[in-house]
Image (tube, rainbow, N blue to C red; front, side):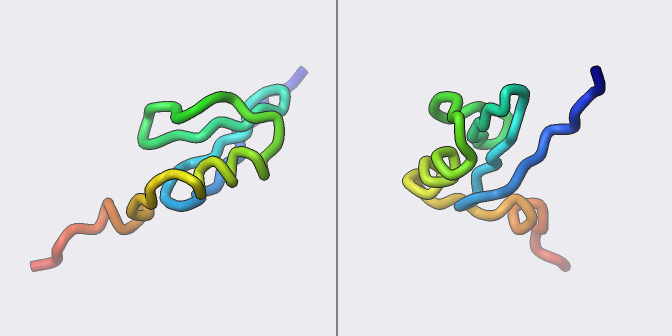
Length: 65
């Protein structure tokens, strides 16, 4: 048995992560939002149904003075 690195993508500003199973989870920062999903499309659709968030990249960039 080997160790598997979780795969992830950002949808509507939320992080969709594939874990063991495969199971897909939606995260808002470090907090899981909603339930575990059996398919990536279901997790992505759920993330799209939530209020939009800033993308993680733009949140980390502040004003440059």
